Image (cartoon, rainbow, N blue to C red):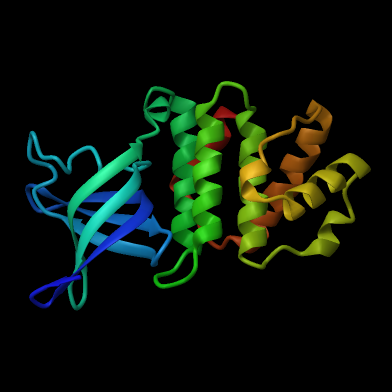
Length: 219
């Protein structure tokens, strides 16, 4: 559908970054099912009472109606199905969530099929928002699956792990994202998995994540 020179698109996705532009606007980065990672301007979204104020906050998941111009998108409406409000009330949970958003921003690209990363992000945020999960384990699962989805996982490295930790890595590799957060680990196995993930991320993720430093001081 188009309006003049602008195509109207409706995309399903989540806000992974937001920054102020000028006095009243925001630039947001969306991870979408249909078009991968895109940037969009939300004009007037910082004005009191704007219907775009809440939907342009990080973690907002739903459908976004955008005008696609020649070089950028502009957001006109949003129908949010999950704001992940639990994370806004949980200091530690919020930083886990922000770390996941940063990794998604690092890994994803425009016009790529990023369905796997979008599903992983959504399910990981749900797990962090739930009191029934150990956030340290959620972080390990997210890091490993993100690396696997992007085809960078060195399988030979997992052979250095103990039997239970190695089985856990294999389970994460083989299991669909929707069924990942269904297990617990004994503390000694979790510590082994955390060390493994830490080494892997330092080797493969060539970036300093702002939220990670705060997160590691909390763990």
